Length: 71
Image (cartoon, rainbow, N blue to C red; front, side):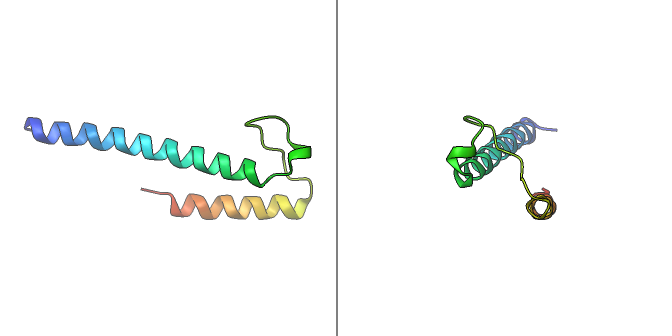
Protein backbone atom coordinates (compact mmCIF):
# COMPACT_ATOMS: atom_id res chain seq x y z
CA UNK A 1 0.00 0.00 0.00
CA UNK A 2 1.27 3.41 -0.80
CA UNK A 3 1.01 6.45 1.44
CA UNK A 4 -1.81 7.99 -0.58
CA UNK A 5 -4.14 5.02 0.03
CA UNK A 6 -3.34 4.99 3.74
CA UNK A 7 -4.07 8.70 4.06
CA UNK A 8 -7.33 8.26 2.11
CA UNK A 9 -8.41 5.45 4.45
CA UNK A 10 -7.71 7.54 7.54
CA UNK A 11 -9.52 10.58 6.14
CA UNK A 12 -12.50 8.42 5.20
CA UNK A 13 -12.74 6.98 8.73
CA UNK A 14 -12.49 10.40 10.36
CA UNK A 15 -15.12 11.87 8.03
CA UNK A 16 -17.49 8.94 8.66
CA UNK A 17 -17.21 9.42 12.42
CA UNK A 18 -17.74 13.19 12.16
CA UNK A 19 -20.80 12.78 9.94
CA UNK A 20 -22.28 10.15 12.25
CA UNK A 21 -21.79 12.40 15.29
CA UNK A 22 -23.36 15.32 13.42
CA UNK A 23 -26.37 13.28 12.36
CA UNK A 24 -26.87 11.95 15.89
CA UNK A 25 -26.60 15.45 17.36
CA UNK A 26 -29.10 16.79 14.82
CA UNK A 27 -31.59 14.02 15.56
CA UNK A 28 -31.23 14.66 19.30
CA UNK A 29 -31.82 18.38 18.83
CA UNK A 30 -34.83 17.79 16.58
CA UNK A 31 -36.41 15.33 19.00
CA UNK A 32 -35.86 17.70 21.91
CA UNK A 33 -37.30 20.65 20.01
CA UNK A 34 -40.50 18.75 19.24
CA UNK A 35 -41.20 17.83 22.86
CA UNK A 36 -43.40 19.88 25.12
CA UNK A 37 -41.29 22.22 27.26
CA UNK A 38 -43.46 21.71 30.34
CA UNK A 39 -42.86 17.93 30.38
CA UNK A 40 -39.16 18.20 29.64
CA UNK A 41 -36.81 16.42 32.02
CA UNK A 42 -34.10 19.00 31.48
CA UNK A 43 -31.70 19.80 28.69
CA UNK A 44 -30.67 16.78 26.66
CA UNK A 45 -33.12 14.37 28.29
CA UNK A 46 -36.04 13.32 26.15
CA UNK A 47 -39.14 12.09 27.92
CA UNK A 48 -40.44 8.61 27.15
CA UNK A 49 -43.68 8.28 25.16
CA UNK A 50 -46.66 8.13 27.49
CA UNK A 51 -49.10 6.13 25.40
CA UNK A 52 -48.58 2.69 23.85
CA UNK A 53 -49.57 4.09 20.45
CA UNK A 54 -46.79 6.71 20.67
CA UNK A 55 -44.36 4.01 21.75
CA UNK A 56 -45.26 1.84 18.76
CA UNK A 57 -44.90 4.81 16.42
CA UNK A 58 -41.50 5.67 17.92
CA UNK A 59 -40.34 2.07 17.48
CA UNK A 60 -41.52 2.06 13.86
CA UNK A 61 -39.69 5.30 13.10
CA UNK A 62 -36.55 3.93 14.76
CA UNK A 63 -36.69 0.79 12.60
CA UNK A 64 -37.09 2.91 9.46
CA UNK A 65 -34.15 5.12 10.43
CA UNK A 66 -31.93 2.11 11.09
CA UNK A 67 -32.78 0.67 7.69
CA UNK A 68 -31.79 3.86 5.84
CA UNK A 69 -28.73 4.81 7.91
CA UNK A 70 -26.57 1.82 6.94
CA UNK A 71 -23.38 2.75 5.13
